[in-house]
Image (cartoon, rainbow, N blue to C red; front, side, top):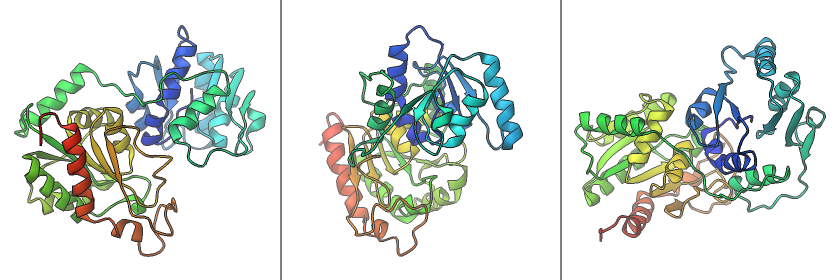
Length: 340
């Protein structure tokens, strides 16, 4: 199977992966994925093996694609199910001469596919999870599970607990996760000073310890929050692998985040969360969890789905710290056992 390219999308595609596993219980299922998504899904029960597709390294350019196709041909796969819609994602299985290639008829790639998923008028309110399930269903593969699912190992969970303990956070501590990043673009990011204020207020209310998350490109943003909190937190930005990130998010008792990959990871692990949405689709990409609350303000230009706001970022400036704190408190009271 060819995986999607973003962590959030990969989480939302896991019900479709599980459907393929149910349809082919005795098959050896290999996932072709970029390094981040490959790490996310390593060890997933739907997958037997992960092959890494490194478009910035050994698989860069035409020579790299041909090298990858040769590697796939050597594996002698019978079927490729292609989850992304790009031309490139269908070209490589075709170059590898995989006899059966199934995917959506898009991006002028229909001739590269042997079975095609056609859509004329997709539902406007369809969630991405349902889209991936619809895709595999068009090939006779029905999904019995509609909730995303991720897994960590006991060793990964123990290592996360040990890391927290080194920083003075015991196993019984209430842990509040803060994720101020969003890799798609700056338009998706609420403001560091507001995340810092929310973290401080909630930690005071709940007697919680704070852990800050962020990728290598978000270190500066997270450092701003750390300064706001006067270092009364654990800053993990740029310091964790995807697997370590997963185990640490899983350990959180509550999560406050932008619309992002870590948001979907938290939802898949059942962590209560509040997500700030601005320019992105709060219907199609909402966290799949009954323990999640979305905070957004209706403005005339949202959702624009742009990486960078071309105007005044009103969809995000309109979201106040009070909005987020109130939503978090309501969700906390409903989901933390024994708390008022």
